[in-house]
Length: 236
Image (cartoon, rainbow, N blue to C red; front, side, top):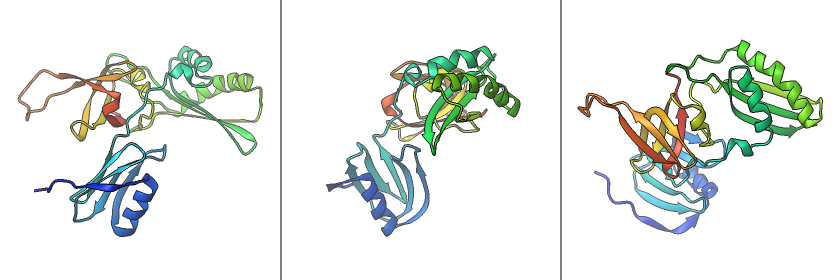
C-alpha cells in the first residue's frame, strides 16, 4: 500500500525537476507534450514525493510513476487562428474539415501545415488518403500565396493520424461523433468515449458501459477542459 505523499518545501521549475529526476533515476519511458510542458514520466524509484512547480502543476512520484497534474488542454477559438477563417470554407467546399492550420516563417520561406479530416457521416469517418491531401493542396496553395503575398511557400497537407494529440480544445467540436480518450485529472485515469458535444468550456462524452459496470445504457459525462490534462483522437 502506498504511503501518504509528503509535500516538499522547495518550488522547483519543470526543467530543474526533470534534470534532477534524470540524474537520480533510470527513465523507462517519458511523454512530453509538443508545447514542452512535462506531462508523464515513468521512473524506477522506491520513494514517494510531491513537488509543486512554477508551471502550475503538481508532481506525484509513487511506485515507479511520476504524473503531472494541473496542465490542462486550453480552448482557443479557431476563428482567431491566423488565416483559418479564410481557408476553412475553401476546404469545406471540397468536402473536408480543416482541423489545424500553422504558418511559420522558416529559413527564408514560409512553411504552411494544414491538417484535414473527413466529416463524420452516419457514425463513420473515412480515413484521409494521399489523393485527399493532394486535392486540398492544389486548391489551398494558391489561396495561401494570395493571403501571404509570397511565392516562397512550402505547404504540407496531412491527416490527423491514428492517434492525434489534441492540443486545442476547439478541435473537439470538429470531431463530434468520433472516439477519443482523455486524461481526467479528477479520476487520474484515461476516460474513453464518443464525442457527443463540445463548447468553449467542457466536453460531453458518451461512454460505453462494460460488463464490469453491469449497465447496458451508455453514460453521458461532461468533463470541463480544466480537468483534461491530455486528449487523443482514436481511429476506431
